[in-house]
Length: 320
Image (tube, rainbow, N blue to C red; front, side):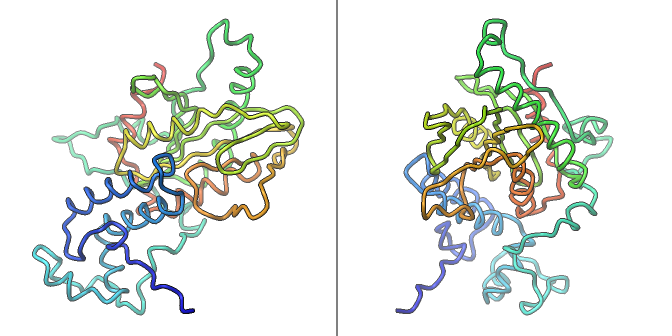
């Protein structure tokens, strides 16, 4: 049996090839809600919607995608489409928007700050702050909570995660901005241990230190030594996605084991579990955290952009 034809990005969002930017953004919000795993969809469907919007929502990537899929004439006829295509690579040479950017590309490009600013239109974040990659600090629990072993393991894990990202990710990714200790202004005052922003993607990260023992993850439930672990992360990912609906938000739980072994604990998965499939939440150890988070951020559009309004909103949610 022949494989079914792959759906176009326009089909995934349910819009016509001539749709304008406003229509595409509205369609993305509807499709993202319908495809979100926590609302009855699936991780694969949500990933497809996110990739479709990342491509069609970026004028340059959309031009390339249209050229590759033979829609150039349709786009040219649409009112407001670019008249001069001399700067657009022909279809045979255009780079696929799905291609992952290399590590060298990420580390060699300085960050671009958006939107443009001037003395008459100052930036949303003072430039001395916008240029810093690390912001905020790990939130400390109250006096009574400090007596809890669970609270201590989370604080220890978050301190280790902040140090790990500062040491192993930020120096090689100039546009990444790490904000620690975020408390969202939703009704429940949801907290996020770490929020990592780069381009149009956000990684929300929770972490804790686990005692020796077996950990397992089936895509929905995390267990340590057979006991389920209460995860705050799904709620935090939803809250950040609601706060920034135009960005692609995903979550990571980093489990730290022995300080001298970043690949402990080993996290077991059930037979047939596809570790490479797109997922809203991943559970990893410290040894694989930086690689997977960096890949997620780098695969988005304009990964070397620092969105100043987004950074300003995140900084306002940290402890003073």
